[in-house]
Length: 319
Image 1 (spheres, rainbow, N blue to C red):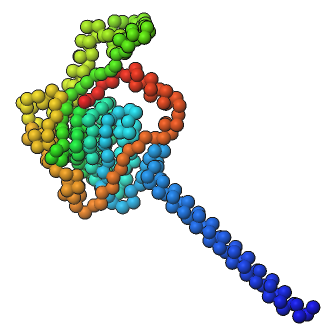
Image 2 (image 1 turned 90 degrees about the horizontal axis):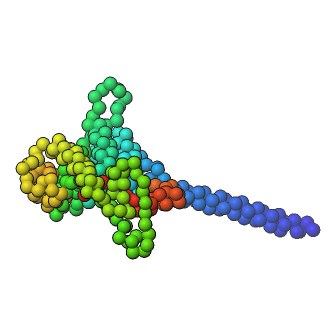
Image 3 (image 1 turned 60 degrees about the horizontal axis):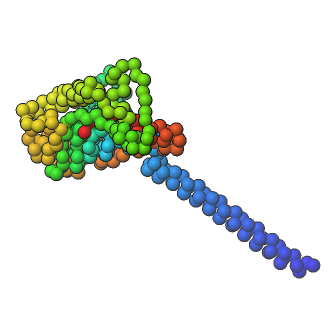
């Protein structure tokens, strides 16, 4: 019996060591999984966080390059509801030393363009320092049109301290359009009719279910021309070097970059990267792209409302 004691003791010691080793290895594995999860969460927040209303924090001095891409307006990735909060989040950070508006847009909603432009103007003032009474420094804003800067896209570019366009870029299309669809012909073919009891002869103007009367057409044209005067005043005020005698300036046409520079719509012809290197030679550039808030995408009511609005829309567009 005594001869078995050393062997039994050795066996117990070996089992205990293995259990301790296994427990330590299990702890290491669990810690590794936690670290991987946290790293994945950080990467997700950087890439997709804005879709949930989370906006990035800039740690080091940098230049923010904000992407203004595609159609501008509600329901699009680029809208005041997506761009303005991102601008406000970036511009309240002292480490954002400059702003580049990277624009490739055919235009869109004048209301959205106006809101975005106001946010850009506000961004030109750096956040106050420790001494609240001291004069606030200015932040330089450069608009770079890369491809197309038309209508509402150009309206946003007007808020830059300088406007640059690449050599093949198209600039201008200063004009207003009110457009929609008419279903009255299709309704007749399928035997569907509509009715409307209105309080006045202009209340049903631009209805998709009936042709507009001459009086309604005249008012719609007046609205477009009134909105155009606002746009025109904005261009004249922000582009003092503009050649107002240019033929077709207010016709809605676009110009190639070199011609746009000659008539004063832009300041220079150039590419994005050289422009950033010239304007901000000692600072890195970080790109920021607005995204839709997925909280709205998973809401059935928002989908139904968007479809109904698109069918009933009578939008005023800067295009």
